[in-house]
Every structure is written in structure tokens, then in C-alpha cells.
Image (cartoon, rainbow, N blue to C red):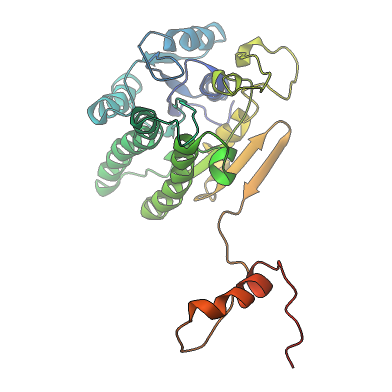
Length: 303
């Protein structure tokens, strides 16, 4: 019996790549999966039935899944997706927000459309499904039902945590998702619902689109042996976070790249200077900021 036997999961953007890997892994652990994918291109253009490909793989391996083709950044569409899981499988336990697009450009070349579309899919496409899932669980909780199996797993990126040239829209969205994860984890804590974020990697369509990366996009089901570029290498972590074994873990941002799982500590206080009870004069900051905050010049003798 798998860690997720009988649980119901939604994975967005699961027609290809990392999302497909998550859906396959959750199904392998016994979950019933709603495979969402709009079927759009990497730039978010068009629509199709790519979700059917992942559903077929799950069914061929003995699992149960249904396809969903909604645009996760459409508020009402996200609500219909949540309702589909409940209507088809009778419940909802796990929401994996993975859908995303890329429109890379330097800030001087990036268009308003490039910015708006990437922010919309990543940020609103995480907010909208989360909003509807949490409201579903909240209604159940108010009616006296136990919703402590509720799990939300969002998708950030190493690029969003440290920055990356030519991806101001993408990194802003991914950094926002990390902050969103921490805030929502606080809001749903009393219901026993956990909210975490992962930062995955792999030979995805998105990775292959980076100029000079030298990466060929491959699907997780195309790997017969362990490979550092397998898009599904973060999927076991997702399955674990979705299980009862991780009920104590919430508000965390975790990178899973190649053979390593790393807890990201995020913003924390670094060096500081103080002037108790007095206002700083801009002119006096130069020496102190350089010596005591940035450490880029010697402080000199101070006694």
C-alpha cells in the first residue's frame, strides 16, 4: 500500500515535464489524480489535450486519473477544476500547483505582455486553485469534518530565490510564490492543512528554452535509469509532503535538484548597525555600511 492510498490529488500543468512526473508519482503511491493541463505552448499560447497523455500513462500502470483542461489562472475555471475532483472522486486532499510558462527577455526587451502573462499563470495560477481548495476544506471544517489530510504544494524555482539574468518576470513570480506559501501556511494552520513549496529542476521544455543551456527536453517516462536531468526527481518529495508522514511540515521552501534535497532558509537578518534613539544622517552611513554591514572595507581602530 502506498503513502497516499485513496487520497485525491490535483496536479496542474501535468501534461508534460515536472508536472507529469508528480502525477505519475502520486498515482504510484495510491492517489487518484486529476491531471490538469491547458495544453498551451511554453509561451502560454494555444490549447490542447496534453493532459490525456499523462492520464493514459497512469492508467497503463494500474492507477486512476481523469483529465482536466482548465486554465488555472481563470478564477472560475480553477473553481471548476477543484469541483471536478470532488464530483469524480468524492473528495480532495492534495493540490499541487505546478503550471507555468516562460517568456524570457532582458528587462529592456521585455514587453508588457511578456510580464503580464508570466505573472498571471504563475502567481494567479497558484492563487486561484488554492483559494477554491481552501474554501472547500474550510466549509468542511466548519461542518465538523476533519480536513487534516489537506495538502498544498506550490512550485517556486531556484531562479526565483536567487535571481537569473533575463527572467525578471519569471523570477518575480517564483519569489512571490515562496512568500505566498508562507502566508497561506499561517492562515490554514489551525485546520491542520499544510502548505509548502518545492524548487525542482530537470530537462523540461522550459529548461531547454534557455539560450546556451544545451538541454534537450525529455519526459519523465522516457528515463529508464537514474539521470540527473530527469524531471521527476523532485516527485518523491512531493509525494512525501502530500502524505501523513509530513503532517508536521508546513510553510517550508525546499529545493530538490538532481540527487539533493535542500531546505531553503530564505531572507534572514544579516549584519546590522544601530544608532539607539537617534535618526541616521545619510552622510555618516558610508563608512559604517561599508565596514560593518557589507564588510567591504576595514573598520579601523575604534578605541
